[in-house]
Length: 562
Image 1 (tube, rainbow, N blue to C red):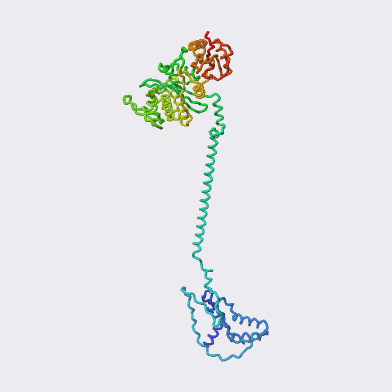
Image 2: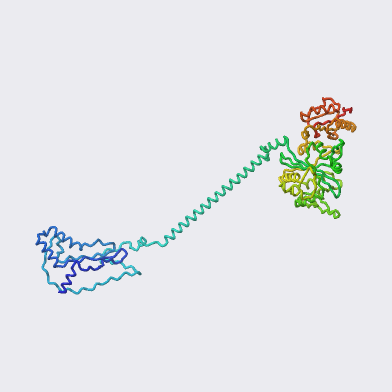
């Protein structure tokens, strides 16, 4: 009874179902599943009898359903690759060759049921190895490839992240290189543009200033027009007094406000100037006598308008040089030291550094037998060196002048002198500066070259400089060769109320007297001068005057004093 009960439970569909090995997965691992239990033999007969009792057609729907039910567990699912198939035994109570009709059979004596073998638990898969799939005997041969060859499909690549990071790094480094190249190209282009702008600006400035060869710019034309037209000049006269060895030296400091240029014009002591009584005297003598009226006399001779007089004694020149920190200049002679006068030696050569005492020694030095022009040229170098060191600011220059401790002329205070020195210093630093020595004849009168190149161009001396309503300036030049004739003509002009300008003696004598004027407005004055001298109007002609005066009289042999 117990064996039968066990056998019945074995085929009971509601009994517990066991996990059975049904195959292997593609990686060789065992696969387990539940298999439905088969019905018991007795149950098969009862189901067939009930169908016959209730009129079911054995060949009809019931048989088909019964066959489908019993055939369902006999049709396993298609095995996967590598899964082993096993032969399926026919169901109990059915003919293996006949599936269309169910035939009941005699129940055979039941053999004693063997004791059920204990279910063997499958060995769990080990992590250190993968079991090889089992294949049926006599099965097909192994294919040309194995599943292990496709392990990369599911296995993660540990180096993939490193490769991605390397690609990103390479890409970013390439972008940085390209960015650096692009920035470098931009810098080169910007540098080329800046250089081109500088070149264009420089060439444009040179063209505007008229400094390009064979090409006149508007700046040059403007400068030429300004030079040919009326120009404003500020100038002072400087008298240097040597307090140790005696003697004086005179220079004019000129600031051309119109052309923005500066100049120093050195005047020889032998230059002839007129005194208050109309008689002539040497410039050096007039300065040593006190210099009263010298500035007006210079204006009469040169046709200028001097703004003030600066008396500069050698101790104050020494202080000025020390205040600006010494000067540098090219010296043309070596001056030995004088221990008694406490004068240090001055070396010879370019760019000699001179202290205050050395500058005074060099400016006043005149070798034995040297012309005065040599000593004036040395004074001009010292003045130029001082101007280059004077502060460019007017206030700072004024402080420098005040620090000298000198008492100035009331007409030329420290502010006026400081402002003029500052402007001249700017011209000297920019190289827009010149130094000239005014040439005179042995009799002290100006040479024709001095009148043309220095008096008119640098000083701007002309008849236009005479003040409105003032007596015209009349220059007298003797071409008779007779001193008495010249004295008589000079006296006649002074008595006529004219300002006398000594023109000296002509290079050669001439037979006819000539009176010239430069401006048509001066023709009437020239005719009046002719009448004063007792000459006919026919001697009056328009022409360029060699002497800087409104009207110039050149006496010929035909002149007879009245």
